[in-house]
Structure formats: structure tokens, C-alpha cells
Image 1 (cartoon, helix red, strand yellow):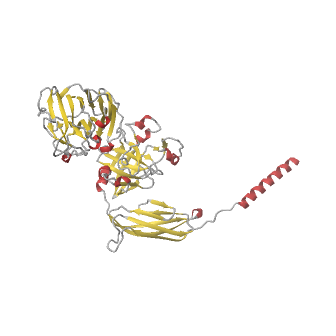
Image 2 (cartoon, helix red, strand yellow):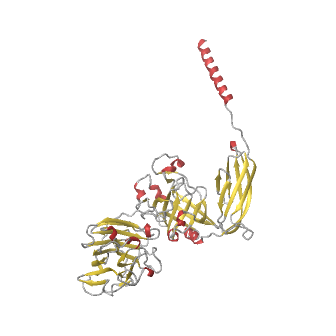
Length: 554
């Protein structure tokens, strides 16, 4: 009996304690928002422009009593949260359109009140070409351009106009993310842009797994300190709107060469394959089969991510060494005098003729600038005593005389010396007249600048990777201006590899999305100064690039 009494006393004390705890617990008041009001200011509205200035911008202000947060819901089903009730919304449907916007005010305990407001606003923004390129007019599938260097990259997002439009911090190598199961899911992404009436939509098929930036792993229930593939559903099509870009790139002096200036805005948290906490992407460039976008990272406005997409599903092709041994064209430069007119023509004049780069030379066909002598071709850059450009030089081209697709190109050359010299051995797409650079493609087999002696560059230019954002590599090669070296490119449907004396300088995986699958022609020149050549030594008088031979094998 004593045993049971003991248990009874314990139970009584426990129940009393629990009862006391309940008595001390106080729930917060459940309050319903009251006096809910919303106003709308159409940006640019005047007596003459009753629907605004064409930007489509409307500034909303919501107020209510007993409210802890607000949410604006738009007719297309998208919404914006607003802790303070203020929101600026850009409506992008072209023309004058009427929209009914719902304001939802949330009180304590989860209760809400709603009100609506009608706004009639004008939007002048339209990018029908982008819509057509994205959808093909109906529906089009896009994939990561996994074979292309830099298909995923990250860079700075600031006022530096020389670096804020490409991934200057990091660029993924071809199929880099395929090397590990923690990242390979990225290449499974299939993005379908389609038109439903006049509504643009995006559906992301991620195969059930998304590549998450580590900062957002918790969204999918992960906790990895590194980026990782995590199970995540992306089912269902998301509404998409296009709007004008207001990024830092648009403030760049050369923004027209760096961005299209159109934003892709994906509703309901949609994203383009790699989860970075962002749903708005700036189109830098887009063609029928290639697209480059830029997105500021969510929660970290100092970073911008770059994605490259193609309409060709990525397939990793083994990088087998290809060799071409059948000599199809050459110039051994064994006959003194002017270069062989059957093989070479000239680009003449200054940068005003289309090869700007702020270069300081005038190209001529004078024997003082270009001559075959003693078994080699000599292209000489000279300082001029007076009149016209301060320097003269020469630029030889096989344009319309010899062109080819794929092969091995070998050039044995000795390079000029002197600060400001910029010799180049390179190739340009023969279709440059109908597909202006960089769409025609450019392969720089060798570039050298006297301000960085003995550093040899190998570079590729193509849409999205041109100018300061070129796809480039370099190596130090000893004695380039005192000894002959063989500069070589091996160009195949699978890859392009650039060498100096069998040392690999740079390479690229070739794909159907790149402009390196049609005829190219050869160019030999020595420039002075310019964007790459840099400052010219005031004491410079003249220096030559000597070429022993040019040989093309297929």
C-alpha cells in the first residue's frame, strides 16, 4: 500500500506542475488586420501621359492596422512579399493594359485581410526577337553547353567596367561537373521555353536532382559545405516575363557589346538549372542555338554567375589525339620579292578600316614593311618619321585565296621585339561578311606582346567570349624573338589545340554550337600598341616577324 501511495503522490505532484505550467502560458492575441488600404503611383504619369512613361513601373504602398507583413499578388499568379507594404512592380506586357492587384495583409495567428486595386499602365518594352529565339516560335529545349569552357562561371558585380560582364573569378572547364556524382546532375538539366498564347513559360526538367550552391543547400534539406546535387522537385511550368536590364553592365561604356539588356524573370522561385537563390537572369547574348545569361547571386550582390546554354544536348566525346598528315597547302617563302599573290592578299590602312583595337599602325604592301628575303617572309613594323600614322606595318591574308575546315596548321616563326609590338598568327571565319565578328569565330594560333616578353598566347573568340572576355591561355616560351619556334594548331570537329614547340598553350572542346565548323582563312600581321600591345617604347624604330614556312595538313 505504501508503494502505491508513493506513486500516487508522485503523479499528483507531476500533474500539479503541468497544470501550473499551463496556467502560466499565454498565447499572443489573434488579430485580424483592419483598415487595409493600398495606393498606386504610376511612374511618369502626367496629364499628357496618363498611363505612365512607358517603363511599366508602378509604386504600391499598402497600410493596415494590426499587420505584421504584406504580399502583393498579380493577375498572372506571381507574387511579391513586402514586410513594410511598399513594392515597385514593373509590368511588361507591351501596350496599355489593366491589371487587378491583390494586397494580402497578414496579422498574428495567421489571419489575413485582402483588398484589390486596379492599375492601367503602359509598357513600351518589347523583345520579340528574344522570345522567338528562346522558343523557336512555339517551344524549344535548351541544355548546358557543357563542352564549352566557361559554361558555368562567376565574377564580380560592381562598377569595374573591364571585369563586371564575365566570369573573371572562375570558369568551369569542359564537362568539369561530370567528374563527380555530387555535381554531374547539372548536365541533366533540360530547360523548355514555350509560348502559351502570348505568355512565355519555362519548364525545368532536372531529372529529380538540382545542383545547389552550398549557401542554399538548406532549401533542399541539405547541409553540405560544398556545392552538391540534392533531390529537389522542379515540376510544372513557370510564367516568364522579359524586362529591360538595370544591371551594372548596362552602365558600362561598351554595354551594347557586352549585354543584350533584356532580363528573364521567372515566377514562383523558378531558376535556370543551378540554384543560386535568384530568379532573374540578364541575357548577355542569344542566337538560335546559344545563350549566355548573367545572374546576381541571391544574398550576395557582390557576385554574378554566368551560364551558357545550347540547343544541343551535351555529349561527352572522348578527346582522342587527332593528327593530320596530308599536306594540302603551304608557302615555304623560297622566292625573294613580294609574297606570292596567288596565296596572299593584304589588308591595307588604319584601324578605321575595321581592325581597331586602338592600334597605332598603318598597314601597307610596301617592301619596307613586307618582303620575302633569304628564305623567309619578313613583316616589319617601323616608326615613321612624319605624316599619317606614327607606325607602319603589314597584314597578309589568304582571304578568298585559301580557306579550309579542320586540319593541322604549322608556322615556323621568329617574333619581333620591343615594347608595344603585337605580332599575331591567326585565322578568321571566311563567313565574316554575313556573320560579323565574333559570330564568325577567330582562332589565334600565336599572339605575343613585347611588353610581356616570351609569353605566348593561344586564344579563341566567339559569341560571349570576345574582347576582354576571350577564351585564352598562355605559356612562357624562351627566346621567341631570337630563335625560330613552331606554332601549331590541331583543329578537329572534337577539339582545337594550340601548341608552341609541342607545348600545349591552350585548347577548347569543339561543338556544333561554336563557329569552328566551317571554312577559315589565315592572317599574319604585326600590330603596334592597342588594347593588347600596350604602351610603345618611345625609342622603338623597327622590328620584324620572320616566318620560315606556313603549312596546312588535312
